[in-house]
Image 1 (cartoon, one colour):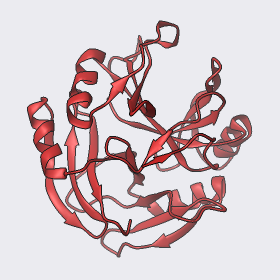
Image 2 (tube, helix red, strand yellow; image 1 turned 180 degrees about the vertical axis):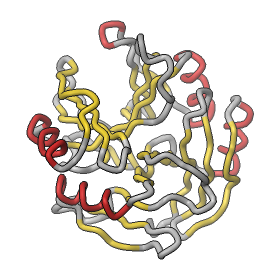
Image 3 (cartoon, rainbow, N blue to C red; image 1 turned 60 degrees about the vertical axis):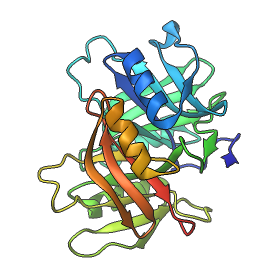
Image 4 (tube, rainbow, N blue to C red; image 1 turned 45 degrees about the vertical axis):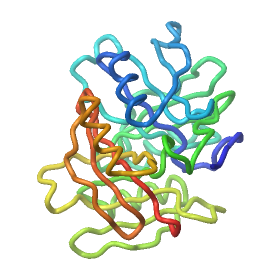
Length: 261
């Protein structure tokens, strides 16, 4: 178990959240699958609530905002920054498209949303009272975030220029994949790779993996709670994983990391 109380280093995936068509249904689903509890939904912030494990923050949920009913339901990944205005401007100069300009979210911090040059949406988060994840490396918390895109070379160049990532290649020609480490970091913070050759016309996007004690048991909980499993539990170099989808079809990964991860 690791508790984190300070702002995350710039470039680190520091938060994930999801807009739900039925907030109560989605809360119940993730409570059953991941054991989440929730803070009170806050009307002044669009009904947003924080998901918790052991009283610590692990993710955010909100009702779908008015006018966005047709938007796809996906987990959004936010990258930490200590100067959101400058970082957003730098991202646009490097080829990103601004979706939401930087805005303050009360006393909690500031957020922005952009699309990188490969078309993948990502958020920026500058922490104030809300530092992002305050619990990691525990069942129910985020285990990993990565970007899968048809042009991983362009993505690596973009995020490398934006955050100074150092890369470690672990993929191959058929499925390129690189771990990234933020400046001063002592371990990889996430990954950037190409799409699975069997995934068809997959859209570029950041994705999230949630840690569980037992992937097979968690996959059964997904089915029982009304979700689906698109990739059955299987072993890989860094543990065991399965690909799931929640009530609105939002895709996420269940992962039991190996000790070496």
